[in-house]
Length: 125
Image (cartoon, rainbow, N blue to C red; front, side):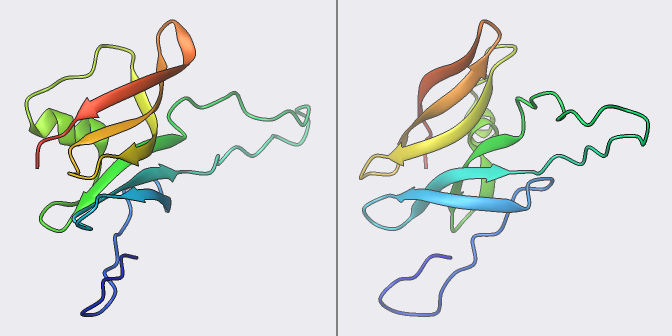
């Protein structure tokens, strides 16, 4: 939810397939919110299978950006809408902070060569 001094709270929503979303930061004007959405593993072991956890899912979390005009969407989709494409094999897991103007976002990602990488993206309004 986003609360402002005037008006009712605004529901931010979720990204399809990611029912739990957590806001991390808001731009100075309140026009953009960033964070991450997660999905829980649906893994159910077979009765005769050892009870081991499922393998790590590099896409279990996705970084989001929300604004009033476009709503909730992944940062990767926001970049694609602006004409930028992520390198092959990259997945933006979480967004941790956004600049006061609401265009520069930072977070962490999975890359083909590492499990964690820092990223910074400029997402036009």
